[in-house]
Length: 114
Image (cartoon, rainbow, N blue to C red; front, side, top):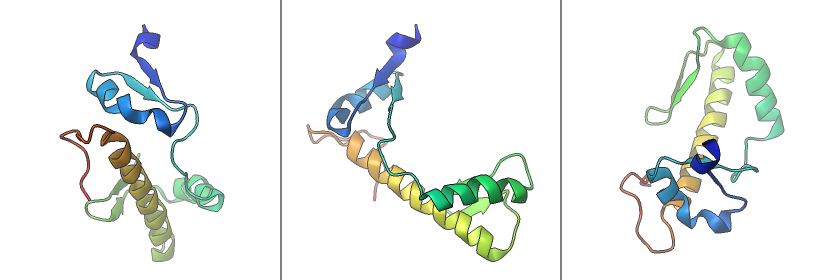
């Protein structure tokens, strides 16, 4: 049953049906990340330093407020984590904006605005 719910996109040129797939409740799968991940040194920082500084079960980034919740540490460490997450959130939002406003010119009602 999962195979019928899975919509795989091999490259960004095929994204025109992504909004429809999401609206139909399908799982959108990218075998390769369709957008750049943070730099290797930033990923290492998040994997190594973040677990040392977590004060609750989860760390959350709130882009609307521009802040991290659940991270305890010196301001330079907090600022670095916040910068990494903010930059990645911007990349994700840009990707979704581009992918969900497809060739017909119609966007989804929930497409992020810039």
